[in-house]
Every structure is written in C-alpha cells, then in structure tokens.
Amino acid sequence: MKEKDLHIILSGGGTGGHIYPAIAIANEIKLRYPKASILFVGAKDRMEMEKVPQAGYPIKGLWISGIQRKLTLKNVSFPFKLISSLWNAKKIIKQFKPNIAIGTGGFASGPLLMVANSKGIPTLIQEQNSFPGITNKLLSKKTHKICVAYDGLERFFPSEKIIKTGNPVRQDLIKSTASKLEALTHFGLQSDAKTLLVIGGSLGAKAINQFIAQKIPFFKENKVQILWQCGKIYFDTYKNHQTKGVVVKPFINRMDFAYKAADIVISRSGASSVSELCIVGKPVIFIPSPNVAEDHQTKNAKAISDKGGAVLIAQKNLSAHFEKQFLELLLSEEKQQTLSKNIKALALPNATVDIVNEVEKLLINKN
Image (cartoon, rainbow, N blue to C red; front, top):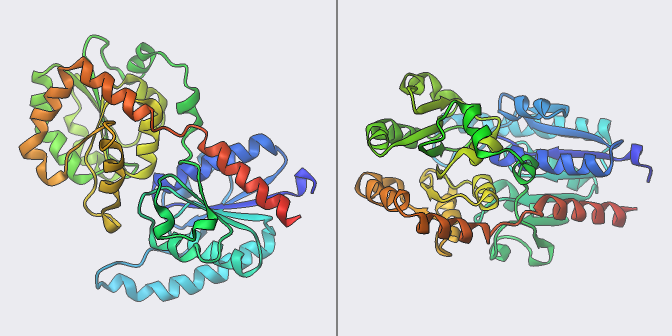
C-alpha cells in the first residue's frame, strides 16, 4: 500500500486521559507516514473538539454521551444518541475509508469501532486503566488487538488479544530539555522555594480544589509555593486565590515545564496522569477520585504505592492525614529521592512506539 493511500481513524475523548493518548498515537503514525490521512472522531461539545484541532488534526463530532449508572432523565436520550452516532459513524467510515480504526476510550469510540468491526476493518483499542470502562469491555469481544498498561487485564479481555505496552504520553515530557529555572520563570515562580504542583486531571477536581484553597496558609507557613491547575470550570471560583507564591491556572498547556518546576506533585490517579508521573519521576501524593467506575483510580494509585513509588491518601482521609504525610515528604530529601527512583522504575516510555508497531502489524496482515 502506498503511504498516501493510508487512511487512519482515531477516536477517544471526554477527558484528557482519552484524548492525549490518541494524539500521541497519531503523532507517531505521522512521524512514520507523513503522507497518511488521519481523522479523529469525538463527542460533540467535549474537550476533544478543541484539543484535537489544536494538535493539528481534523475531527468530526458525534452526538453521544455516556449512560449514567444511576436512574436519571439523562438516560432517556441515550438510545437516540446511540442510534444517531452509529448512523453518523457509518457515514464517516464510508466517506473516509479507513484502513484501521483505533480507540482510546470515551463515548465516541464505542459507535465508531462498532461500525468498523461490522465492516471488517481492523481495530485496535488502548485501555489506559487497571479497571476497564464499559466501552472497551464491549468492544473487546470483536476488536483485533488490545494494548494495556497494567497486568491482570485477562479478567476482562480475551488474553490472546492483549499486549502490554503502557500508556502513550506526550512526547514533550520525554524529550523536554527545559531547565528547572526556565520552567519556574515561565510560571512566575521563585527559585528559592519548594514548588508544589497540583493537578486534578484535565477537567479539574472539586474536592482537591476546595482542600488546596483551605491549606494555602499551611503551605505558605512551610515556604511552599503552589502551581495549581484547578480546571476550566473551577477557574472563576479559585482565580482570586492567586497571590505571590500561588499561581492558579484553568489548564496548563506546557506540562513539561510544570513537571520540571515541581518538587512535589499532588494528583488524581487517572491513567494518563499516573503514566506521565512515572516518566517524569517526581515525588507524588495521589488522591484518587472516589467518583469513578469501580474505583479504578484507587487501583491505579495502589499499583504504584504498593511498590514504594508514591504516597496514597484517600480523599475522605485528607483532613486527618494530609499535613503529617506532606511534611514527612517535604522535610525528607531521602524520601523524595526514594519515591522518585521507585516510580520511575515503573515507567514504560516506549508505549507509543510499541502501540504503533501493533497498528503496523494489523495493517500488514490486512494486506
């Protein structure tokens, strides 16, 4: 097959945890096949409709959302959205004629890969978490390959389809040559104070934001400056907390600088965040979201903390345990170095390359 005839369709969205792996895979494909046509399919009104074009790729939107796990009126529209999305996914596939369809999770990847499977198009899904979501569980029955980041996924997926690759991360994190001083200057932070980076996931985290706002006097008392990504929807609430030594951002585009500036990180434990933190090797306190399917963020964090790579504090225990555990980490260079070394040992930095190698195998087998 000629490179210019190569058509690749990717779908993943809803949160950065699904979007950034898909973009990382697309970038690696483009590196190998500069003339290939790449198209994204996302959910209308979700963040992929903004982030994918920013990364330089075209995207089409489907009218789709997730089914709620509790009884709610929102579920009434779900069957109509699913039918609409399947119909539009058929149209997109008919027009674009992809050689392969790749899904990284999220609402839109379900209808798109279901249609691709029904048309005999090779499909690959990438599961970021230690506990898969509904979409990938359903797709796994007919998809050709499943790239995973954790051991033990045979409980959910056919074992013969599973390849452990790790999660794709943004290449700027792996290739960053920025100095710490350059990163601190970028955010207007001082070089003579310890820096705490707070990230609640790409959409922000309400409980973490509330907690950090309460603890600003505690951080200032201990000479800790804060770089705080609060999330777009919370920015108006927390922007007034910005003072000397507290930088509040709705979203941080230069995460390579953010990680470089940080001495300690407080983070949710979504799959992408965990994978990035393994690669950058910073001391981290994980505060998993308790509001996710099957409590998978706690399982993600526990996979790291059980190997001595992170501190894990349950959200419900923050008031009781946070100050003591934070100070133990802040005041012990030895503990910081141990956590850094152990979390870095769990990194799988070649994930994107390994996933695209699997994509190539599917393309070769098809031809």
